[in-house]
Length: 216
Picture (tube, rainbow, N blue to C red):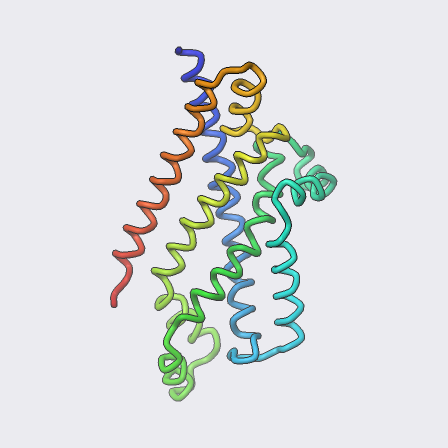
């Protein structure tokens, strides 16, 4: 049993490493992209119809691609960036790229929920676009943005498990390599239980933090 426990522990840690690093990268790129979508849309602070349509179309295309197909398409690019397309290092690139459009669209939607009256009042007093974004949009949308972090993290857990079928490491790899190929149903069940626990923990924590930051 000790051997199984150590394998599952390593798989859990590898999964968390992939998810956390990919989550950070996707938000570093996705938040500015989501803000750009917001301000460039027809009703935005700086409407740029062509820019918005191009960005929106690209994001929709990337979101519509199944992760396993995106992962395969990105193999040459991933090898160029990190030198490998397998293991937890090789999975961080496709995981991040898969999550960036997801984050951008959620950020756009969260910021769009801010009361228009607040934006109008800031315009009246002569606030700059930067001030409106950082003093109104982001603070007001913070609870929704935090919930979005949970949704993205859970999606990344699912993607990382799927990546196990291609040697991506983590719990998905353990379920396939040690469970499925060796007819060890117990290992497959353990990995599913751990994944469920991770999802529940993330959902619970982000919901709690979101409620705490909701000043309404």
